[in-house]
Image: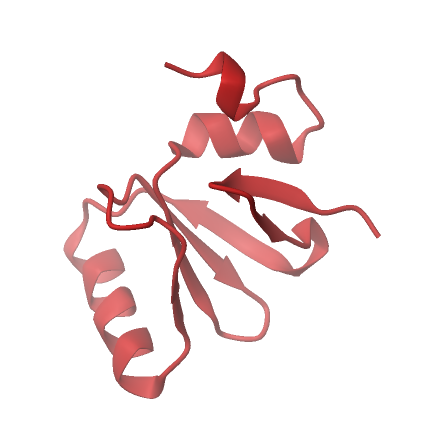
Length: 86
C-alpha cells in the first residue's frame, strides 16, 4: 500500500482521497465545521494555517498545512517533499 505524506509525518492512503480543495470558500469552511461536529475532522496542520482540505471516501475531512499544489505533486509521485518546500 502506498502512503503519501501530507505534512509533519502524517500519511494518507491516496486511494481513499476523493478531493483536495482550497479551504478559502464558504462551502469548504462549512464542510470542515460539519465534519468537526460529526467527529470526522482530522487536523493534520499542527496548528498552522490550513492550506488544503482533503476529503476521503469515508466522509473524513483532513486539514493540511501544505498547499493543494504540493499535495498534488506528492500524490502524482513527484519529488516535492517537506525538505524541498519553503
